[in-house]
Length: 316
Image (cartoon, rainbow, N blue to C red; front, top):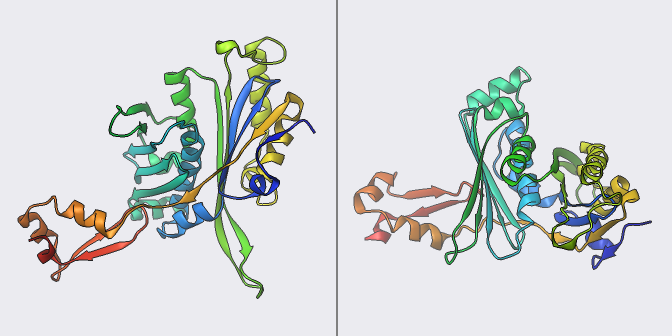
């Protein structure tokens, strides 16, 4: 077995809610596998979205985890779409400590109609618009943002277009979202749970003294790596019985692949009554009066669906 684990235990590699970085020296590529279980289930179930919207948001969360895991500093990676389709906006955040959150804005009637006729796919749900990816490096540094026109049939296609156009870096990305029936407790009961996974592979250059690939031909090495990565099936990306390190070995075992220490992922919204109250305090008395209904101001967090209620008199 050529794959090596430099620091990760078997329990870590086999767990859900992780990112597993790896490098295949023979093909001159590095990459990441993301596997999401309880975290993505909490994000999607907490909203009560239609199934097609859940799948689309789940793809975005998996993609955000793959991209955000490249952060080498404390900060935030934001993935956002803005389109003219039934799902007009997706907003997903990844914090450098592995915390994820996300939500969607959509026209429920339009989505329902697409689902009825069997056309609730990413292209039809999103329509035309843009994908923006923003790296927030904190108040002391400027943010970096890349924007690309949405093209292709999936969010992965749009991200691939970004790397081709903006970074000029050969990249392979595939994500999958599915529901998995899981037993809960020992009483024989169970329920359907959301799962998501993804694979990202990028070509390494010879800059910095790195000897990319076995054959010394960058194009040949990348083509070979791309073909191998393309054999991954969606079921493999979400299969709870297939550990990410085994998936990597299955794909790249002939390319001297090395797996590195896994990084944990979790769902964490970060909202609180104190933060919401501070936000409301920035509005004037007239605006606060307009927000009040039946003597209360109610604010619902779009990321976690938690509701906060305040008395307008608290801000006098």
